[in-house]
Image 1 (cartoon, helix red, strand yellow):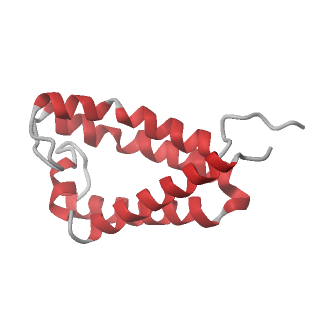
Image 2: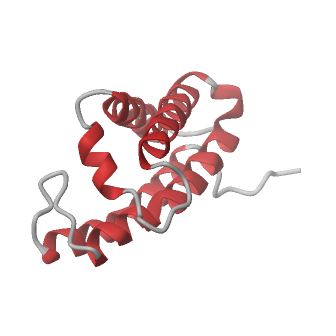
Length: 133
């Protein structure tokens, strides 16, 4: 099934966003991302930030360039957004200030954007459509 021009723009935009976020994990926003790693996670927080940054860069580039596999990249990105959601919840529950989110209200509102990212990944790659076979 073909994707629309708007879906392609949304897919490329999401890919660029992910690649940029991944680069920021490894460079200028590293301490902000470290603040989001849940304390209960049994992995070194810095390693978690590095690995998630590498995954984000890879997913972002794949969303942009692996057009033949865009449906699977959309599903993979959606799963990734589900997997990192506990970090957002931990930021809210533990009242961690990061990324300018320095109030409970701001941290709570952010939680509602994760489903938007999941749907964005699925819609922009046509992963929500059944195959016509």
